[in-house]
Each structure stands twice: as structure tokens, then as C-alpha cells.
Image 1 (spheres, rainbow, N blue to C red):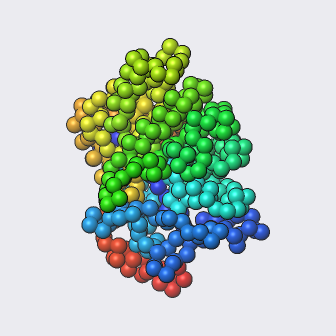
Image 2: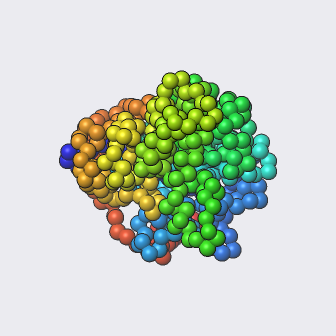
Image 3: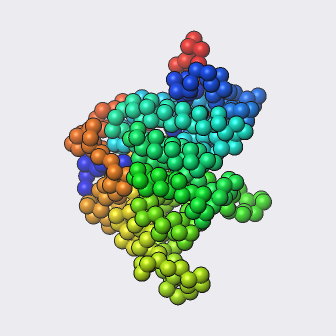
Length: 422
């Protein structure tokens, strides 16, 4: 396969929400109570809501920075590459990277709406959560039809409203919602409590909406040495996915809800062969609790429900058929430090070639599996011949890919916005 002929759909990227995102989506009487992006006394720009600040506004958006400056947070919008928060610059960066379509997970709100869950006034939180979704669907994703796969936040603290929001989003054409990996770590019932989560599971099954479980929400499950660096959690984050898989598979959700679809977002795929082998061995050899899976192996059930998403996993690609070639999907992770930009096509193809992946399987991994799982027609708005890496790169040949320090990004931002009051 030639790089120019590839089609890339990234099933995991991130958006840094712009300061004005709530302006057009919150009812007038609540507008002064909407979350606001405010600079604190230390020079960090954070979102504030009901008197509480978000843990992170920009969440490791360091694409375009030199490696030695990478960390969890640019301090302000001015230090970020504009594609992090500006939809027009995002699409130009996608063009340069040959990315046809992208799913953008939230930043300040958290991957599981924890920012809204932990606010005191839950009725107000629900209003703002819906406004967040309307911005994401009707403004961010709708700005360039065919270039984004919208994903919604849901009120995990209220099962009935949770199900209602799933259905409302589905009616707007949304194909995915982002959920906690391990809800019990944020004060909610675990996924073993099928009574609590039943309204949600029924809603996503009936609408075909995918349940996305993004790594990072389950960090608290990793009990690290008190003097260990943050690197330990970052490296081990994907292992938390096995905990979530265990709760959903052995806790009964995957068997009780046969139409449940789960995307393991940014979880990697290397853990899956070992985990499934261990599950099958336990089921056939141990049977401590007498689980009845209806004559099927746990590995079969897992594959029926799952899309396994990875950024780079060269060793696991060599055992892709043990994982399941039809359940593997690629992702870019822009604009985080793990992202592959601006040369994702070259990187991905080299990794595929190194693992001996033939062209038909490359297509499955880079776009076909994702589009089938999320029930998306990738060429509804953009003809296939215009969706290739070569065609997209031709749309934005002038994208500057220079690496700059955060201080230089800040100077450029201030120059662009001089006199504009930004």
C-alpha cells in the first residue's frame, strides 16, 4: 500500500474547549451560572463551575512542543497549538496528517463527566452537561460534515436522566458516549450493579450508541509507591482496562445485553491476548463461582462486544489474529504527547509493514472496523477518492509543522490577538 492511498479514521483525539463554548447553548436565565474559563493567581487558565475549578483545562495538549517541555498542562490557550481548540485549525492539522475523521474526547469536563458529577447543584450540572453536548455536536462536529464523529457526555449520577440523554444524543445522530472505566472509583455503583446501570445499558443497546471507556479515569485503581513518578501511572494506565473488562464481562453486562458495544479508547491492544487466554483458562478449569456463559468462551463474548483501540502497538500487531482482526482500530491522540502528528500515515504504514499486515487488514484497522462498529458511512459527505491521505494533504499544503517552545507559541498568540481583547 502507498501512503497516499491510505484512509485514516482516528477514533480517539481530544478537544480543548474554547472559552465561548457555552455562549450559544445555555438558556438565557442560566447563562451567568455556566462554567467559565478564568486565569488563576498562578497564571493557569482553568474552568470554574459552582465555585470549583477543573483539574485540567488543556490536559497534556503539547503537540508542536519540544519533548523536553512536555507535561500535563499548558498553562493557557496561548501556549497551545491552535488546532487544539480552533476548529478550523484542527481541520487543517487533520489534513496535514491525512486524517479523514476524528472522535474528540473532552478535556476540562473529564472523560466521564466527573467535573459535572462532583458539582453540588446536580440540576444545574445537567443543564450545563446538555449544553456541552449541544456545543460539541452542533458547533464543533457540525462545522465540517464528515470530519468528526461526535461523542457525548452523560449524567452518570442519575440513571434515568442518563438514559434520556443517550436517547436525545442518538436522535441528534451521535454514535458514542464516554463513560467511567471504573465508576465505583468516583462514588457510583460498579458495573456489577446491573440494576443501577440497566437504564443506560438498555438505552445504548436500543439506539446502537457505543460505550467508550477511555484510559485515565481509573488511575485510582493503581496503588503506586508514594514516591513513584507520574510516568508509572501513564505506562500502566492501559492495564486498568482489564479491570473494566472484568467487571463488564464477568459482572454480567456483556451477557445480559447482547447488543452492548464497548470501545476501549486509547487502551492499547497488547493486554488483550493475555487477558482473554486467562479468562478462558479460568472458565474452563476453575469455575469457582459457577458462571454460565451459555456454552461460549469469555473470549468469544468479549470480541462480540468490543472495539480495541490503539495508538501504537508494534508487538501486539504481530498477534492481531489472536486478538481479532475485526476488532482492532487505530487512533491518533492529537494533541497529546502520545499523538502521531504530522506524519501519522508514514508511522502507521511502517508499523504495519513491520508486523507483516497485508493491505486488506490495514484498511480494516485504519478505518473499516471503526466505521462498521460505530455504524458510520465515512464517505457520506466526502467521496472516497477525496478521503485519502494524499487528497487531504493537498487541501492544506501550507500547514506549519515547526516545533516551538510554549513561550514562542505564547508570543505568536499574543501577536495574533493584539488589540482584539483576547
